[in-house]
Length: 464
Image 1: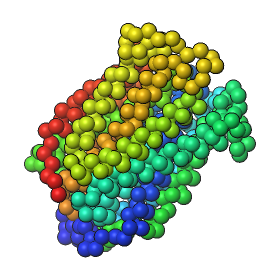
Image 2: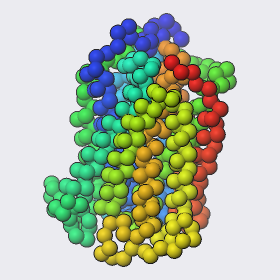
Image 3: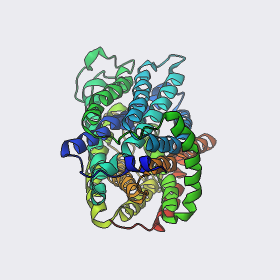
Image 4: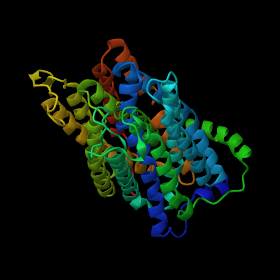
């Protein structure tokens, strides 16, 4: 590592003002609607129920697309992170990949039910947008150590996730109240006719989640570009940095055996994050297939889950600074294991595998049956612990990364979160296809949380 690169990545002599930190937090607010509206609660269930041939094949196709995007991210993240370290600024990279997020999300509007190109357009737009969102997040994360002292990283990461959840909550509320309508009644959750002349029968409200995500990102990421300081440029040309970045990446991977806690953490993160990504990717699809939930039910579920996620992320940041990120992540993994087991025990007419329950009847209202209410409760538990899991993993990485090489190791962090991300959704897709059962697909996630938790338990973390 050259002295210029180390200087560019080193913490500043004077920490930035509050407005710079607040502007950085709004990146999570800007990006979260992609994960809330598209990957979880609106577009993904719409894809499975209205575009794919059936719910099981929709879950499988969505899994293969998620896996493809994860493979691309896994291959390029550490290399691009190392290049950014050697050139200095992160904002140009955020702008480029943010552009992919905008283009991919906007393309989802053209996935019209009944069109022969609807499925390819939806999957291609989703893959492009996912790559853009994940890479932009990687470079945004690498800015953390220049914003607050080490003892405040837990607060910064947790608050960022909480702000992001609030952004996702507001975007989901707007979608449900004003845009997405029940195709049978033509009314939104607020009992209104969709604004902007959106046709409920053509599911235009569900498809508009893509353009809304794109516009939301453009508007709310702007303060970060204007107010948050970036790492200074080193003067190194991009081609030179890329050439050196390949060698640096090889050296870093060879160095990991001499950094046992860091290597073990990256391996653990690789596994449990993959389980979490797949759980969120298929949670809405699973409910649509097992309980027949439509946009309204899924949207209310998403709002409630996002509220608990916001609270969990904020409390997780407080706990992180108080007791450390490792206990927070381990506790979150234990809760996710219980939630997965609970979900597997549910069916339209039973709970906990053997207890019979009356199914919901038409006109009974939202979440009328006992299995639906139990699923709702388990979803709220997942929301409560998902934020702390992700936020404390991010702060752990910031604490474990060697000084002057934060971008490089956040690239490895993104790699560890994505190198098997094509395996998780792909295994879910394969199990769903082989057994023709959504429940069989979800069962594979239990192994990811178990193995990830055991590996993380052996990580040694020094407190600042």
